[in-house]
Image (tube, rainbow, N blue to C red):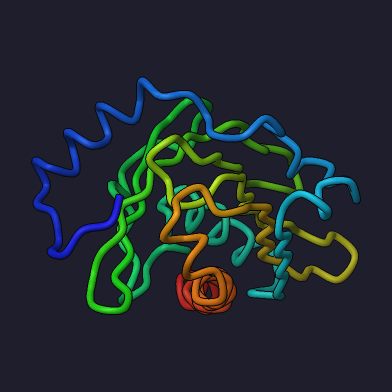
Length: 190
């Protein structure tokens, strides 16, 4: 949904309630678990990874940062709402400020990873999202080196004519989000 002004909390809450009833907007649900080469011909695939910490203390802080949606702690992106639990079926909205207008996009968590050395989740786009696809946010603890990595993997394609029309800008914003999100996670852990 594209908007000329920032929506208030009541409007966002209404949008979330309406979105929670919608189906996912793509058929490849869960494919960020094991991304296949076949998706690369259908979707744009983005994969970014960065070491954001080291050791047990940073590992605990990394898990907590994901639980608190700290990867969205950016000046041009707002998660609605950061107290949403990381659990299957949870619906959230992402409000983005760009080029003098806002876009409000709905997503639903499609799976959660909660293992001794990996923690994260993936969410998929709903009908009102400008894009169609899935994005995984994960932290991983390398028990040999102690390094904590933050990993973002996404596949998407335009789902709205404005996203299609502004395709180069959309791709730029997706890459910028990944880079800014990595910096936000590094700040949250340190």
